[in-house]
Length: 171
Image 1 (cartoon, rainbow, N blue to C red):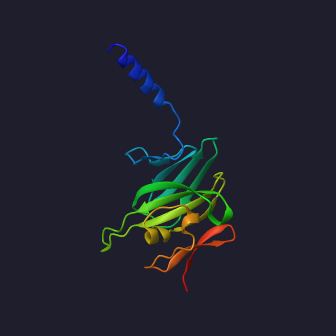
Image 2 (cartoon, helix red, strand yellow):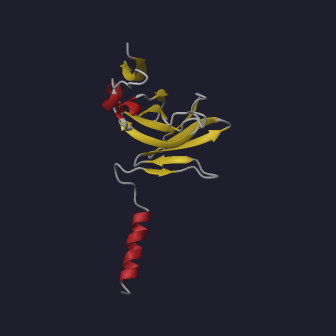
Image 3 (tube, rainbow, N blue to C red):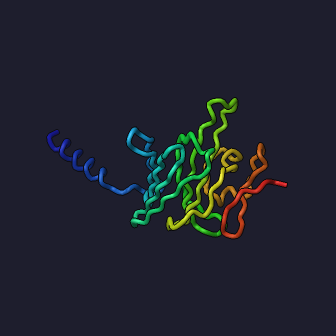
């Protein structure tokens, strides 16, 4: 019994300093003095709210950083953020998806999703848009899995314009 407690403490201490395993993400809700955060093995994103606008700060494990401000005033009540590795339009990217709560005065409980596509090195933002694919397939998936999937309510879908994912309306 006396050896069990030190063994447990040694095991627990070692796991506290271990890296995140591949495929695991850690989501932290926003606190009074802390931003919303999503962390994966090779990168992490922070979402800050500044006077009604939102700023994103991304960091790779190699120290590379990017900051981005969302200019769309409609991106308001962010409930949750998700990070996804994608390969849209023949390129590699890291996608940050913001789940936006419906307006309190809205009769619908439908959430909107805003996707920001960063290049895989976090050098720049490739594209950003309201994502119609999430409503169409009822899941947050990598872009290569949902290219061309049309949202039946809006008729919008994700297409490739060269190496850049964009939104198009079905004709």
